[in-house]
Length: 285
Image 1 (cartoon, one colour):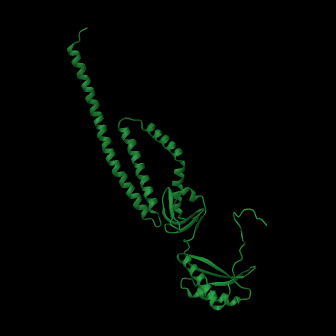
Image 2: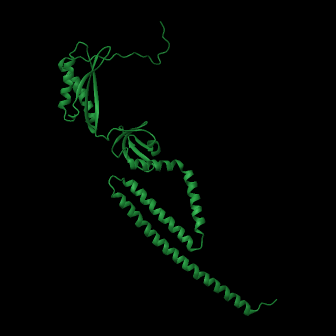
Image 3: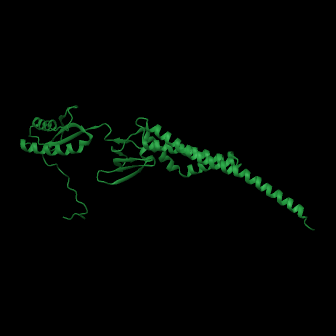
């Protein structure tokens, strides 16, 4: 069977025509997709800056949280742009959205623990049970807060140890914040002999507290007999200081009380300690 040149040329011409029409059609789709992506990226960046800037102007709103919501807004816009770009090429956007939802659900189940940390981090940043620079105790975690992130909180212990605690653990545990109220109460208890002057010991401790400018005048320092122990009468000095001066004032007043008692002839009995033999082996007579 011989091929008719006219028919072959006509078929070739119609094929090129179809390809040309297809190329023109898809070229408009490609150009439209490129324009959508450019506009989408610009819009996403503008919306991110607008959301972040607006939240930063809200009093007491954490900057970490404003950055997080700005980033979420940006990715939402980019996801919408992605679906619109696919629609330019005739892809059924409903199926794409369903696929994205299924993928999001699978990722959410796989990262359940991580998402719990993010949710807890958002709650910690919103409710602010502790802030950077505050000294807290949470379960067996104790230290100064250095950073509150979306996934974990960074702390530093008094002896310089680094702690990274997951936010979900911190959120589900009672928080003891030693800094938030700005002042703390302290008790210094010292035992004196039964033959010593109790009133003199109380007055000596009160004079030391009132002479220290770091001790607050309100509430006023007090001194009282705390206990009648076996070998001593325990006298307690109760006072309030700023949270930053808590430890230094305690150390200073404890030392000063011992020196004042020595000067006034008030004895401090040695505490009776139980003798415990460890790893001494069997006792022989």
